[in-house]
Length: 78
Image 1 (cartoon, one colour):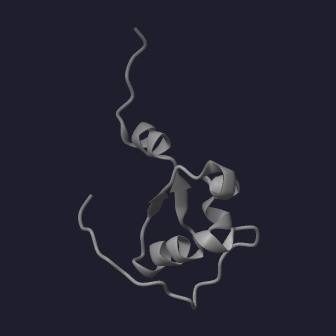
Image 2: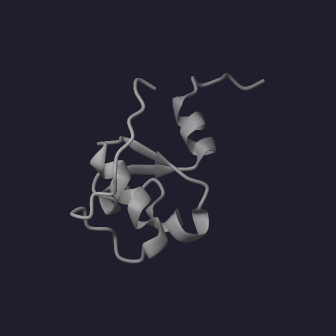
């Protein structure tokens, strides 16, 4: 992680169809700060966008576990 920046809700960013309104500020905030990845545990409401940047305007949405797995060096089998 290089920096942490607080941003407001950018209401000009369109949200994907099917994303509950309660999640709009989080989604738009991630785009407003030009985040590469949005980490969430909300699989019920955001699951359809997980690891589908083509559906999230280029944003990669993952659980913390998926993110850590994707950044960890491969380990040889034991």
